[in-house]
Length: 570
Image 1: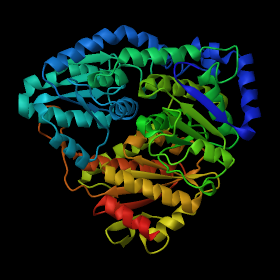
Image 2 (image 1 turned 135 degrees about the vertical axis):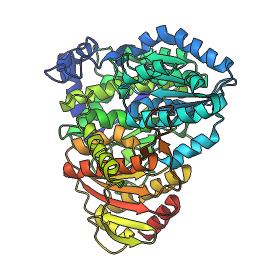
Image 3 (image 1 turned 90 degrees about the vertical axis):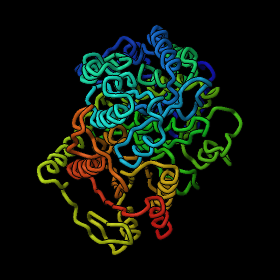
């Protein structure tokens, strides 16, 4: 097994099918064909495959870029910067967020904040916490045109300009993007401090080990050489073909388990992640969901569900634990893998040598995901259903700019400070939620979409709601903040077999912030409050158009308190 990572399994009835899949892939030279870039591993045509395989070489290739990163970070440190803020969404933000949560900044390096929301309250909190004279902003988008990222950039550019003057503001920004993107052109025109041109042959969700993930890691003072060395060791292990076992090629083996489990009806991969590895599950969630949720198929990652009794889980579950030590992680009262296996669930246990194995984990899951994609017969590199929500959100914004109002949803009834919208049964919010949750089909799931400002209090309330609904329905329940999940699980919600029903939670922002029409100009025709409302409306329309059911709770008061009250009344 490569490095310090150990994989163990208790697959039960899946064992024979996994062994057969591994033998078939070995006979068809799948591993070598992946490494030489053979698109026919996935589809007959090379579109969005042949130009998406650069991540395979990233652990080795990025070692040659470490000097460029070091020079930049030294310049930033010696120029007096103390904080760095990543402005990005999805693949541009999730790996930096993992780094920022599992590694504290070393002495003399920068505190890192990742901002991947359009909720004005969350943006205002970040703005208030910053000394803009000592803050560097990293604008990250592969395409160069991500609306959330560019909106955040324009807002903060104007805020910085108030402190430094417009001519000097660009020196407080750097960009990570593909060569020739609109962001690169904008960054040059505004004299950004640095522009990192990423390999265009790497898709966003596979970019953790490129500039998108490594530059934020370097700002924290992480030893990138060690991260890449361990990732390269894992990559070498994922080249092995002469042996189907997990000890030979862990990525191939894990991908076989994921793919076979999904084909056998166990398409809800439920993660229990050691607290020392923080939000690794959020990163894997995007990778798996956006890569596999298409063509009526999909693997649904379930992250954040508290461990429950065996009776609350259905037969559609595959259980995965990730820990960084052999002894029981702090905060775990028992080993989920042992308990769930004893209850009859197939389980995979991944044990690492600590947070510095994060690069190896990134590569392991990337390779496993594309192997699972092969078994499912889909292209793991495209995202055909992501655009639908964007198109609908644009329509909402166009309606706003024409009339001065967003389209209004009819209210079925009100319960305290909650407006219940949609096809709601009953006369109270708890009753409407109970009845709606009862309609989750066999083998289906319920997704909670929270278009609210993230906070520890709201996190806790959402996961309490997640557990309550899981326990009452015996179905998988997922939670995602909007609009972040639109760049993650949003693809699966519309591209899978239609197994999901969805609860939107929106609120009334206590304050709003303008989105400048152009960086450096005061004119603003749209605010962040309007943008996030349009995104929620747009996603609702896209889900309904795809045949999915949506119920909305619009909260006028305190979100966390209202959610706790709702759970208490269920």
